Length: 313
Ligand SMILES: Nc1ncnc2c1ncn2[C@@H]1O[C@H](COP(=O)(O)OP(=O)(O)O)[C@@H](O)[C@H]1O
Ligand SMILES: [Mg+2]
Image 1 (tube, helix red, strand yellow):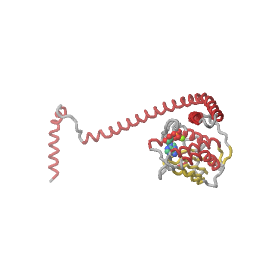
Image 2 (tube, protein in one colour):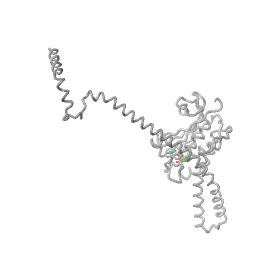
Image 3 (cartoon, helix red, strand yellow):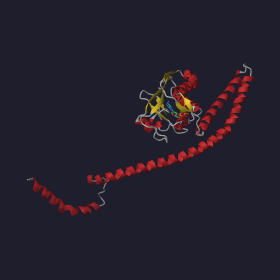
Image 4 (cartoon, protein in one colour):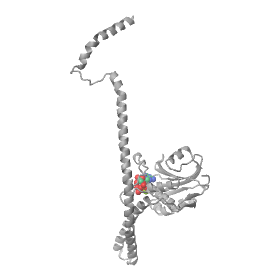
């Protein structure tokens, strides 16, 4: 019963087909709403256009990053040159103010305050210059066999005052079975001091700083973190890990990818140089290790330093 009726409709539409053609050309019927069939055809085209736009955008970003990297390199070289020039005059100012403070009677407290302000300003300038020089420093390391816990303890002593001042509780979870490492002690101390200070800065309202060390066999995930380095890790290899945990502000998603960029800082001028993590990363990389930073699920941030053990390397 239904078949003939369908045939009949088909017959009708065939018969009307020529009449539709001129109507399509008519100016009164704009193609505002494309038919579902047309939309089907446009779908893939639209997707392709979107993909093209996206890759164009990515290409533009990559180009900008390259330009930025080239600029940074020349800025780095220029900055190191300037830093060398400024270092000596600053040292003279520092020595001069030390002498004045020493020679001045205690009663002249107002003048003493002015001199102390000068000293603080010099210290801040020295900080920036130190950062710039580290950043541009040569790649030479002076390594010796060291215990990581010892190096960490020495670094903690350097920030003890800041920890007390900011009412930060220190928790040590240091493993006692760590294999010795080949480290440039001064540079690794510098890394930990930087990480501790970042953690302290993120805990303005007090908090807990946890320093943890452990040894374990490298996992595939950790190996991939180090994959960008020329000296890759092997799964199963013994690694020594140090973690610096804080329960401070944490790092916003947008900033997480930028914290290792030289000169990236969220701190006010005079407090942050944005060079700390960039320097730390290159020092750790020079040791054949990796440095990563992430947010903790409990809040706050975790910096993780991973070294290869020399014993079974
Ligand atoms: N533990 C941390 N908690 C929150 N933010 C952090 C932490 N460590 C680093 N950051 C963020 O990374 C930025 C870059 O750090 P860094 O390179 O050490 O430079 P600086 O400390 O001079 O700002 C900081 O300004 C801060 O925004
Ligand atoms: Mg820092």
